[in-house]
Amino acid sequence: MIFTVPTKYYFAYGCAEGYTLLNAFDSALINAGVGNTNLVKMSSILPPRCEKVPPVRLPQGALVPAAYSSVESDRPGEIITAAVAVAYPKDEDHCGLIMEYHEAAPRDEVEVKVRRMAEEGMRFRGQKIIRVESVAAEHTVEKKGAAFAAVVLWD
Figure (cartoon, rainbow, N blue to C red):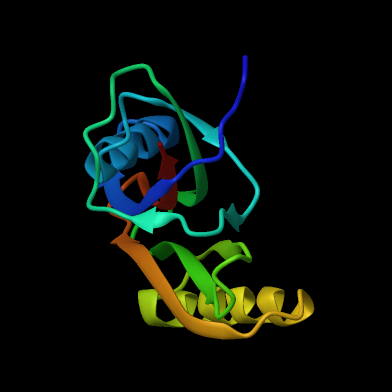
């Protein structure tokens, strides 16, 4: 199998309750629009000049590279959040950086952390940042819940 460098990406996120924690995770994937695919968890690099697009209707069963965060809980009343952030380099020929983070905390706290993580990673790479974008899914657990956030890469 030959892997190509993705040229497009989009953000996806969702949350849900389920009969089990795995069912909650599966339902969160469906809520995010990626539930009928085979996600391939990847490390956190956004290829240079990758174009942001609206969510794509992915073919069922497709192998889909994604940098993602997920969190599940069976503690009623607990607030859980999954988030991803992308730091974009000033130099268009350099890759961007995706960071993933989850915590039992409100969305605003988790997003602040994941954005800071992306900024730190780019500084470590010696790259100046032009902007950082993030998304997060926050869920208050009823019985068994899950939250999911991803950067989905596609060609």
